[in-house]
Length: 112
Image (cartoon, rainbow, N blue to C red):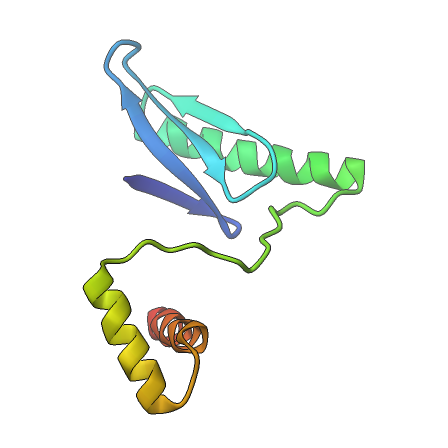
């Protein structure tokens, strides 16, 4: 899936053959904010405007402009992977949850 980024927000991008238009939505927020354009430049400008409008709306309404996450995530993995994680976590003397959290933190840190 293609994405755009602006001011820390991500917009997913799709194309409609029927309408001959690019379209997308801002991800990771409470609410639905769409944008569209007939060219990449138009789409990018519409995305930027959508983010700016969303932020302005949040300011006017006095609301936090991001989606809140609970910190709980259900991930489906194969039984083999689950078993390997359990063994490694046990060897390290930590819980499966702590093992996965540490692995995700390391992956995220390597991407920055």
